Length: 64
Image (cartoon, rainbow, N blue to C red):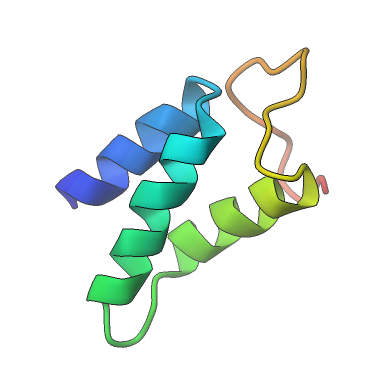
């Protein structure tokens, strides 16, 4: 859970390379994967793991 929190905090803060690193580690540690981590990684992947210039720390649900 601590590793997920670090990844989530980095995501919110716009440090997506760090968020990617932590969230990928979470997925490796969980046998069945991790849906929240996968969702965040998928969103960041759509943006090439770089937070948009106007990043406010969140995105609307369903937004790609």
